[in-house]
Structure formats: C-alpha cells, structure tokens
Length: 212
Image (cartoon, rainbow, N blue to C red; front, side, top):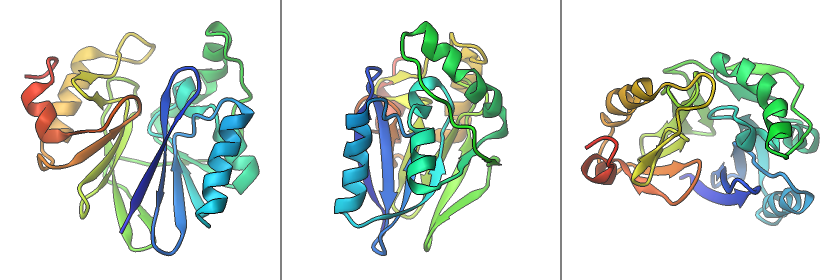
C-alpha cells in the first residue's frame, strides 16, 4: 500500500510529494525545496521514516517544481524522469527563476523520458503515466489505480485549473486533457495537485467552474 507525504515548499507554495511503500522504498515527485531549511525538512523526513529513495519524477518542469531536482540528484543519486516535451521547459527554468527573483542551480544530470501509457513501478505498486498537456507541453500525471490516487501536477486544482499563459501553455488543450484524460477516471479518485488542497475527480466534475 502506498503512502503519500506532501510538503509545501518555496515562496511559490508548491506541493512536493513523497510516495512510499511498506518496504521503505520511495519516489520523490516535483521537489520544490528552494531554501536549505526546506531541503533539510525533506531529508529529515526521509531519514526519520527510514526511506530509501529510488526514483525522481517531474510532472512538468516549471521552475517551482524543479528547484530541488539538483539537490535530490546530489543527495540521493537519483536521475530525473520526465516527459520528453519538458526537456526544453527544464532548460528554460533558471531564466524564469532570475526573472522572478528566485535564482537556482538547475539539474544537469541524465534524463529519462516517460511517455503516455508508461508504467512507473514502486515495488509491486504501478503508477500509470497520463500525458495531459495544456498547462505545459509535457505535463504528466501519475495514477495509482488500486488506491485511486492521482498525482496531478498543475493540470487540475480544487475548483481551478493550471494557468495557460506561460510559454507552451494552451487553454483549450488543457480543458481537452482534463475532459479526455482525467474525467474518465473514477469519481472517487483523490487528486494531489501541484498547489493547494487535495480534491477528487467527482467533486471537480460537479463544481469546477472552468469545466462544468
């Protein structure tokens, strides 16, 4: 059974997730730790919970979701997995950081690409990769069917959706992605978004003002 631990990091208030199982194996998704104290918070949780991080994933590569990529790589020797369309977004992230007054050192290790329909394994638990562009060209979600959990990045929020005014964003594409890729999931699926509180697919179908 998977457990999900969420952290809120950086001035952008981004949600970083650690997924882990009974064997103590863990996946780190979208490490947004910007300050050294935030890095220590993540490190101490992993240490105190006696976890062994085995994979680093990005739902997409806007700056707030990649602040901690290099630190995770250096600390745990984890190479980055992402959608191929996010490679250029990742490369652009430090320039965005400078414009926002949040300079940072970018990840420059090996890249491993995930495609729509791929499966990420954590022990016996399977996470299905769902490509859902619109907020960013290579935005992907990670779906655990057995426990009905979706790590959704910035695709869908509680009563909102991801912004589409950044380079590579497209409003209609995002709406199509949500309707075609996420609305087909069971209503009880719990959505862990890249910002804000958790929600469910069914609640957003009924209440999200962008999609009802």
